[in-house]
Image 1 (cartoon, rainbow, N blue to C red):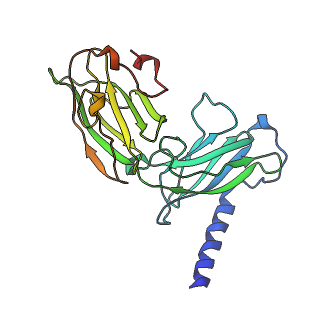
Image 2: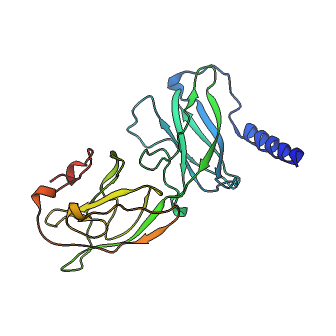
Image 3: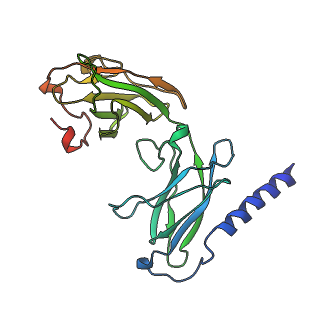
Length: 248
């Protein structure tokens, strides 16, 4: 049994090595962006995750462009190429199956060790574990009087840390599906101009709000109806980060 496990490990290692950049150790310039991160994405069960999106989030510089990314093949393998030298947090997502972006602090539930690309080692091989699954919210958001679909601002934050939040517009609309961290208590608020705020599980009063809590892979339907009105004392986001057009 041990021999078989060792053989499996060696087979995976050899496959990753053959899939990785062959230029490890070559001197490169940071401007050339010849860095590469390759590896494999596995479910928590150990099976390879196909069609997962791998993201390389730079932790030592800002980035205005989309994150460098790659999609895994049928064996869960990937290569993110044309990277600059520096530190990256490598995570994955597969939203169709309820796996959120692991590089976002709001969703991340395990510490991700940094991957470092340097002049002496411009390539790296990593194994990414996909999971745990997020909770899934689906449903509609409408005007309570007219049933017209609405596109409000949304504000989620953890009850344990209000600064660990997800907020903005465009996250939820008239017919929505959104992933939320599982096994975590969350405060959920919706707000739109000329409407009263909405708090989970379905109240306009902040004092009556209850935490939202979903298990991994659990799907919950919320058909939300916003009441026309105005409450200037409870307008906008409750967390420290709020998009300009979501402020009162």
